[in-house]
Length: 240
Image 1 (cartoon, helix red, strand yellow):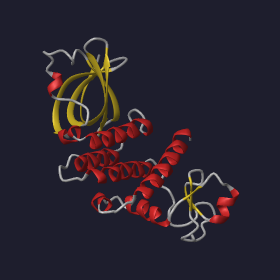
Image 2 (cartoon, rainbow, N blue to C red; image 1 turned 30 degrees about the vertical axis):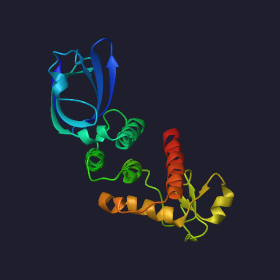
Image 3 (cartoon, rainbow, N blue to C red; image 1 turned 90 degrees about the horizontal axis):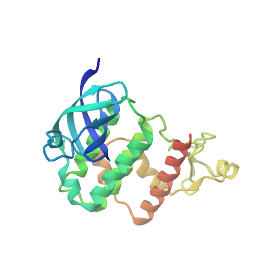
Image 4 (spheres, rainbow, N blue to C red; image 1 turned 180 degrees about the vertical axis):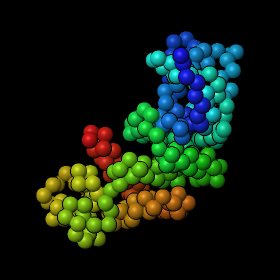
């Protein structure tokens, strides 16, 4: 006998199936990540389409069958409609959702991750948010996601020998899990040099205060550096 379940969830991905069906990927407070099948939702007469879409929080009801979960009801709780108006915000929203898809496995329940998603999308949805601040929201999300998943980097001392860092000779090592000193860099030169200012930005991001993060002033050089460090650390965690 099929079980009927209810949950509140953030819709981070959707895929069209056959002629009129769709699969929704939803991160819920109650169950973690769920793949929920919506039968005939793309038909004009479907009642389900009025309550669920990507970049939204919906209250859903689904039946747990033998092989899949089938959506039976959906009601919007929060629609982040302003994001779709801005190409930059839309890009950042997709990057956040792709990161969630890459790092969080099916039915890995974590209320803190749900709250992090909600916090970031509320800021992205804010009409007062300047487009040049959008990248900071992505870095805020991804580095705090790493932290919640148990991969918080060491940023205050050498991650390998635990010695004090010299401001002009700081490196970041994905393998060691954070900043390393010059001596340890020479032992493993796969590390990349990182400026002290960039390390300070990461420290502030990991304080988990999004308002404080959005007050940061970053130069293009910092953003290139942050992008490189973030991509390297992401690849390391995925491979691990």
